[in-house]
Length: 606
Image (cartoon, rainbow, N blue to C red):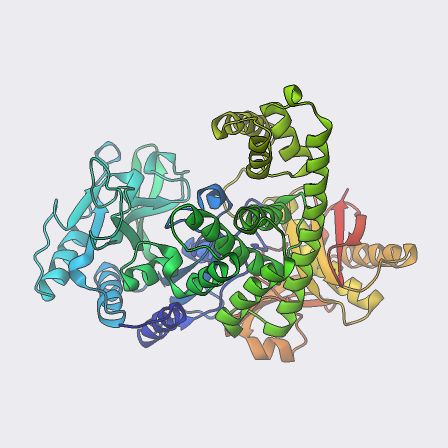
């Protein structure tokens, strides 16, 4: 069956719409209401509040979506045949509606009947139970799987096509295995589906190959989580009155299975970029060229999505990750072509925009944003490259060691791969192991220094965080009042210590404008106004004057928060019940540029 990756996404959405699921758009890559994590890293993350019991805005109990995700921890892994940083997670959700029989059947039928995957290539896992905590084996899921395979004329037995695994493999909760769950939190067993690739492919099998191993022969393409337990205390777990289903399936992984090729970079989202790199470099996608071509393709796809959401390269948080992506891609391009040509980078990014189209992009506007961001960062990196070369030339050979190489990397952003290549030309060898050890020592110090930066798991809803989130509504309206109604939110980040708010505006604020905005926010806050929420159709919300975050795509039903008669905005929360609950004085600490036509405010309540 010839299916594009876009086709697979569309088929998934349409399949579950026929099963009475409401199709909702992807949430942004940067979670607006979760300062504890840099990026949305799973399809579950934006749905967490509904899995924990909050009603979905539309009232739906069945949801389907494809969520944009990014996992920064995988950056160093990119280069093999299956790791990517950006990916899409197909998801379907039941909030207390259907259960295992429907979920497993639908997931199986979608893969086999809709995508045409050979069922003899599919293998499944189930929860083996936790005797210590009194949680039984998930025999129900296993019996369902046996029946589903039997309907396809396939005998499925435990130890052959079905594998039982312990909690570290087949249990989901926010804190991992059952004993790590906080009291009162939900969790439950999951059941994964794996695709077995044709053994003719070049795969290095492990010594103890099994369904859930890491040798590459089996690829997890889908996972159904059944949240059916609540922790009451140490070793005490109670069935939940509302049982939820949380399904996640990697879009790119499904495409690899449909292609029957374990190399993720042969799917259509990457294959055109790989062909382009072959053409401009004159090298084939094989042997030593595979890793750099994969890095360029993956990193520029991730950079394209980040830039389109208003993230700019910087030395902090999401901007730092974006900078790493672009510069790492530049290093690999240097490996292939020994030059940095910004036109090549821009062409690749524009191709990604065309490939995904209007599903995720405002095509013409985003091409301009991406073009500017890529060219500016490559220009800066070119300067770093020149500085690094000058530092090398200044040193005598005997002064050049691993500490010097790491200093070039840390201080000047000079990639070790290029340092290594230049030094080898001078007869100086510094191994990757030596550099990795120096880097790990530095990372360990950094981790120790910032150990508390992301405590609290997903969705920090501390009192100060809720204050700041509510104040962003007042700030947004005050900026529109002072600067004009063309001002629109372009992003935000909230921690218990401060708020950061990006907005569209073409110049710096004057002292008088800053003071006026502060005055309005404090006046509105101190009025003690009620914060009210109502759910309504998106168009009704817009017609009623509610402000929307212009970069976000919304579901058909949305939550609208009103602060008295002053502010009315589409949002997902959390908020105070009354602005009088916010104690202290609002103050703008800094206001600066955050890219072309975008300004950034940092503010506190003290």
